[in-house]
Image 1: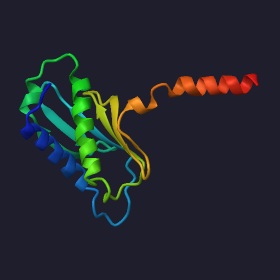
Image 2 (image 1 turned 45 degrees about the vertical axis):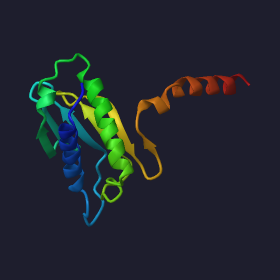
Image 3 (image 1 turned 180 degrees about the vertical axis):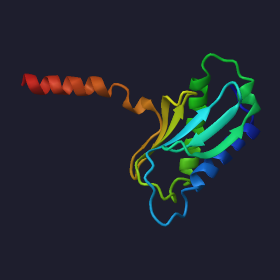
Image 4 (image 1 turned 90 degrees about the vertical axis):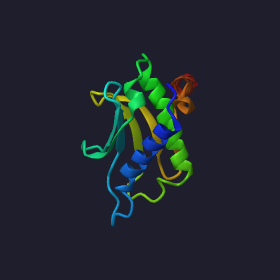
Length: 148
């Protein structure tokens, strides 16, 4: 799926609108996840918090016209790229949200498809590639430790 620059800008503005609800608050909010829920049938992208409170919603015609089988994988890549760009620009630096918190891609049943971005004071995980093989390394380490 290739979205137009106009659609990408609209998604970016929706994310900014959603997170700006946490900018300038007198005290930090406890939010552990910000959910992004694209709908392939309607073309809607809904952004909501842990309590299912809608933070932003937009309609992207290109999403509704997409009939690919790997819709969520494509959306994961698009959203990770946009969130990474916003992170680099400092968009998430001024939010009154206790860290760590996640941006999560969810399906129509609100089941987690992928973690898109984890925001922590000093740690940033943009994708799962950084963690690949960690389980095996830890298992090997533990086995070696127990055998010695």
